[in-house]
Length: 454
Ligand code: PFF
Ligand code: NA
Image 1 (tube, rainbow, N blue to C red):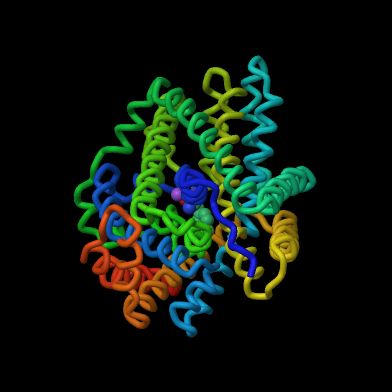
Image 2: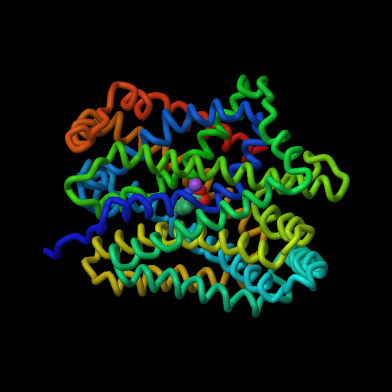
């Protein structure tokens, strides 16, 4: 049998795992989620979720990948024959994400390109340009008149993703992340420093950090914290299992999980500061309250930010930096999502990696081109909603229940991790995965179903 590919270094693995974790969820999902769920007080449930679900599950997924050295279906299948389907389920969710995620990256690409063309002296036309385009999108519910132009960046996104995937684990995925993640960090730091030194920035930060302590008695806030942690750490999407399956035998799993978890949360905090400083600036410029300008998601990135940027000094430069940061954050996550099914299909059907990339990546690329033509923001929302409910909540729930209660593997996994890691796992780890996480996810599931009916 062919020897399994491996990461070239520990740093390579860590950067790839961080690359998957750090994504659009950090930049446009976290800030608004924190703000809406208690502001400064949100950090309490958030930290609790990180320590009782995020990091414990990362440790578990790293252990599974490392121990069984296989893609998600194969690894789950080795825990118990009846569990292989769970791997396919998670891969299916990842596949679906990979058909619309690249469209968002393509937008960011297009906006980067527009910002380039936006020389400093023509600054004030930036708003008109961005906003008119966005409104056209929203209006038509499709990509309207810019359909032809989205196809070019979308093809470019796929070319980049498939290029790195095609070069394999060490020469492809690892190299990509070694370029993308440090670049992302530098660019993002420049943006945040600029944002916090703009007039009004502190009003924004004030709004962001102001704690509403009553929120911590609200179950919804806790569910939001766990939801954010799961999505943000790419847990229960087959990704971390796949990436960990390329780890060498001697790897400090537990330590790696703590580093990934804290790096992702640090980036999230940084993004929260940057986004809210910028929103404070915008409120200041337009004589509005910060609460009136808060938003998240596609609207924040492609409508509100262009407006903010066009009011800043050097809009062209900051436009390029901001949208490039979205591109970099998105690409590294996109590579990780696609790797799940490429590895899964390759192993299942015993075909070459190249073939698996051609079929799996090719199919996802074709579907995404179709989405770009037919769909629009509505489609994106629908798919996102579906992924959060049936990806995060349901597949996370199946994962912990199957492993902790049916296969009863926790003790076994703990020994595996402890043998190769400095930090030893205690009872907290088993309680987090076997009891706390299933309760929270069960609650989340019920809540999702209820809001579906109403
Ligand atoms: N973890 C990524 C983020 O926070 O943006 C998003 C993500 C990537 C979620 C890949 C799910 C996934 F499969
Ligand atoms: Na994240």
